[in-house]
Image (cartoon, rainbow over all chains, first blue to last red; front, top):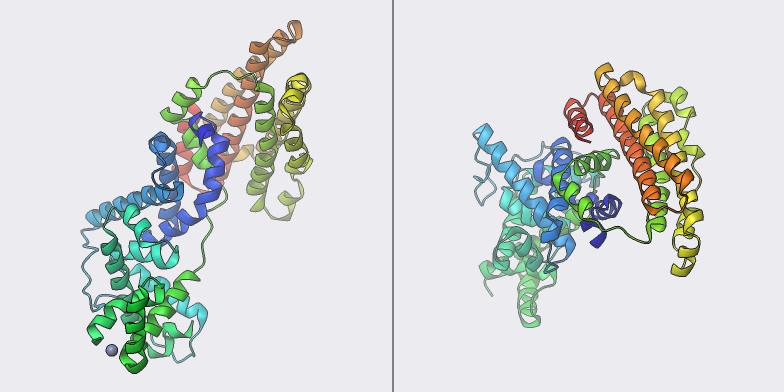
Length: 182
Length: 256
Ligand SMILES: [Zn+2]
């Protein structure tokens, strides 16, 4: 940390090696594609380098980086939505608007379930997608997610609940490929 | 407990965050209500599947691009300018030199990876010695460090030279990928750095103990390595056809 602040790029590289994979996979799933995630991962670490002296140690470094990464991703999604004239947060609670995977007669298959889960996650509204990724994929706790997303702990809980309900509705459309096969 | 209440709490049941009395209530309801049990099973399956999702790895060259952007960033220049001179100069340069060997190997792999068996046979990184030996030297006791600073400086210089030779070899093998104008800029920068290296060596020759002369030699060597690294990343971007990435690196080169 002190070495990073002293301008030592190799110390900052250690920080990159520790956190890049986590932040990259989060960005891939938040943005829905790898090439945007690569660009934003660069922005995230450049920003982290610039802001490192603002890190006060009130949260862990991992939480601080998650927060920074989420802000960069959400800003990007909002500007992308503005450019494309899309409203990203318009899905109803019954899961309408999530396109169910194509029907298949094959037995439940782990790879297919994973693929469907990725599709289901990509179709979630960004607020509950963020909370779901941090909680169920990254394994963080609600109080950490509250810090990262700047929301109340109760909001984090309800967003994760909402995401799970939508994903369940998504899987239930195709009985042959339910999540219970995983 | 009603189904509506149970639905709200079943997520916390599978997360294991319910208080014991609440947990007993929810479990009792789930035990007798098929609809709520099915919800519990589905939530648990979603959570399991989510936790088992693969973590895609960032592409190998990404750090080099980030490092390139950091080095041309005002925040970096501010921090390196503010860095006080250190009496452990030898140890620091040695550590930096040791990590270089790893960087050369990584760059060689990155550049030659996509080139088929012909390109793959020539791996300049192979000439690099194992990194563990140098870090052993770098982690010695303080007193010992002071005594052996001079020999370490020589050792560090040797590592720099090895790294530079490796990088030059990679760059040479790929020079056709570069735009002639960019290549000319690079060559001009290299000439300036080589001149600085020659001058520092001359100064060290007449005053071997001079700390400023040692520092300026290592600074020049470091600049040369950094320029060669940028060159190789640039070649890689050009081959991949990543114009935006290449443009960023060229921008950085012009600033340095
Ligand atoms: Zn019930």
